[in-house]
Image (cartoon, rainbow, N blue to C red; front, side, top):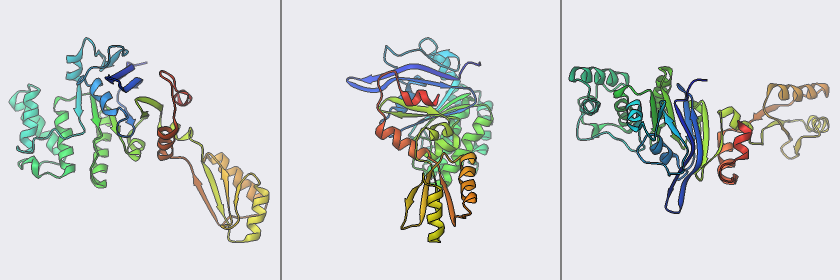
Length: 323
């Protein structure tokens, strides 16, 4: 197996008596998107700061490697390999978008002509050419965020940390940012993304870790996580009371709603289970007037894990069941 782009084992961070990260494991294959999903205070930003060498982990943390470099001995090499877009914009509003880009090129020690070329290419890629000569303070939130990521890409990093990159953006700007992230991954870039938006993790991430109280409550693909939460069902509605009563007899395992003439049947939403229900209706000679399928989504997973999950340090039954 290839070396992961990011790997951390037993990652810990405390501030006095406050435990922020309690021995979490993270492994991100190259060229994928890994999402840390969790509420405020879960430890997402702290994890990003440690992995990007901005702060140090606790002394009893396990090994950390980023881009094949050991964090303990190769922090400088890690910094050269990564890009970081934090929660708060790094854009200087007093200068133009182009000047922000050229400043970043200078910080990366690019020759002047090379810096100008890279800045021009990125401004065009992020649809900022028309605004390039304007002060960044005049940019909309979405434009500032695009400029932020463009500045992050000046050094051509192969690993990028995006800490809640779409917080505060309107839906259109958020979707634009998703397209940008997908484009980065298509180019082979590895992205570690933190977010509070369930839809964002569902849309972008190859794997998702739900972080709660400094621990990973569960980890897996979006589909794997959805399967660990019960509550999937098929609902059948009828307009004919006789058809409803016949269906209730034929499907005795369903929960009845006599007032609404509806049956609710447990189901994982699979084609196999749906076909079995329809076959039972056919055998009984009944046709439902309405059929709806509900499968748990990331909202269900998130609320179930962050409201009810209890763990002990170093173990987590839910996490292991997904893996």
